Every structure is written in structure tokens, then in C-alpha cells.
Image (cartoon, rainbow, N blue to C red; front, side, top):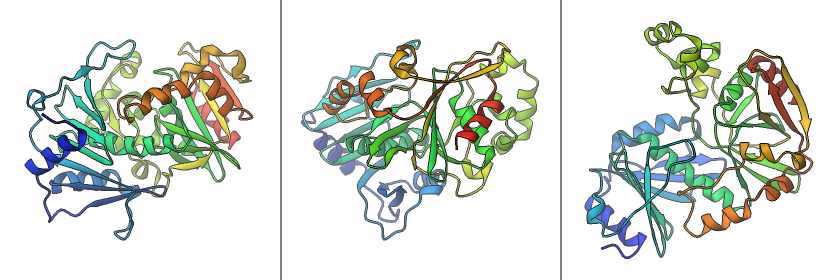
Length: 362
């Protein structure tokens, strides 16, 4: 039985030793350097391609080391712990995760893939079929950066972000409103990409700073077909199949594609830190009505707060997660955003007009 997270991690690292021929992968997330060590050259290569915008120099000293071990899915019965089930989010039915808290950390198991993640006592481990589930390893790497940023005074936003120079706009909205789609439309107007789905926002002496996450947008076929810049995302033969679908069916497809920013918009267009000078909230409908844009006061709009507030989830440190959820109240978000212009986009969906508005704000 594993008495601590450290014991659990050491057990796996002994059973699945690192390959000395596989060099560490160093990633630089805006000055926060991550070292990924693994026993799989295939996993290292896949992650190097995915994070190619954030590769660090070999001389960089890492702030965190993450171990990713390719191997069979760990058997929860052999770990000597009883996992607790994470209940699905509202509107969802499938149970995807379960967890166990040790005195010094947490283990999280992905039910659908069998991947196990453990973190605590300064150690961070992903173990299981990592190559087949490299997207989950990507998320684990990014979650370490999110945790570090939140520990340094930021609040977590469910939002996308774009920037130009010393100005940046966060874009949020309830599920399905199209914040990522809007960010990718805005990118065609000579902007830089900051984040797709998560932003960490902190108040510094000079104003608000938003930090992005090194994750490529995962977008549906409808988004691709309505943005010429995204042409490289879908192979031509698949594109024709999607083009033949009715519009309402196209937008409801669950099929997702990774949109690599450099392939779609050119190199050097992904940055992870920017001043935040505005927040755009999408509250529109696909009803053909005109787009309406209004600057609003969040003090009187409790209905819009859940559109961008975000709980930290299982991959934030145990104990700290409850403290963060207590700290991240609507009042705390309003206080953080004091003096930051907030705009509500209501009426009918119009991504081109909304992108032009974001362009004007920048």
C-alpha cells in the first residue's frame, strides 16, 4: 500500500525506469521552465512537436520536473487506495475521473483511458498509455503552470485571450457561445494568441496581467469551415464531407481538431502573457438578429459571473483547492476587474463584427 504520494510515485519510477537515451524536454512558459522526463522517445517527440512554440534552451534551469512513464494502465486495486468518484459537471452524465488524497498530495485516475496522475511533495507523475493519450499529458503539464500562476496571486478565468502590443482582451461566454471561435476570427486581424480556454488573471502594480495556457484550440468543423485561416486544420477529403452537412448539424458535431497557431497564422503568434485591458462576454443567440454591444457594470449582473468564473478542479493541490474556491468568490472577481472595461455582446451571433470590435479595443 502506498502511504504517501511520494511512495506511489517512487514505486512506479522503479517499475518503469527512465531511458537514459531519452533527453529531457525543456519547455519555457513565459519564464516558468518545465522539464519533462520520460521513458518513451515517441512521447517526447510528440510533445516536442505539440509544444514547439515553447521549447527552452538546454541550459535552462527548470522550475518543475514532470515524469511521464509509458506503460500499462495502473490497476487501482493494486495501489491499496480507495478512489472517490468526481461527479460529472452540470449537464454531463459520464463519470471520467476519480481521485485519492494522500497526506502529501493527490492521485487522479482517468477512468476512460486508465491514465494515472500523481502530484505532491514536489513531484509530478503521469503513468499509463501516455503515447495514446498524449493530450492528457499535455493537460497535466499545463495544469502545473496553472497551479504555479494561481499560487502567485491570480484568479482562474474560463476565457480565451488575444493581444496586440501592450493591450489584451479576454473573451468569455457560457458553454457553446464561441469564445474560441471569436479568438480565432480576431487572429486574422494581426493579433497574437494568448489562450484558448483558460486565463489566469492577476493585478500587478501597472494593471491587470493575463496569463495563457500552452494548449492549441480544439475546434469543431463548423468553426474551421467559416474561417479561411483554419484551412490547414482539416484534410481536403474530410472537408468535403463536412461541407455537405446541414448547418445546424455541422455546429453540433462533437468531432474536434487541434488548430496549431503557427500553421494557421504564421510563426511567433502565440504568447502566454499580456496586459489585460478589456473583457468581452458573449451572451448571444443564433437567431439572425443584429449584434448588440454594450459596456456593462458587473455589479448589477450576477447572471454573467458564471460565464467566466472557473473552479480549479482536481489538478490543483489538495487542501489548496478548497482554499482557492473559498477565495475565488464573485466579489473577488469583481474586485480584481475593477476599472477594467467589460462588454456584453448580445443579440445575434456575428463573429466578423465581434472580431472587428475586439480589433478596435486593441
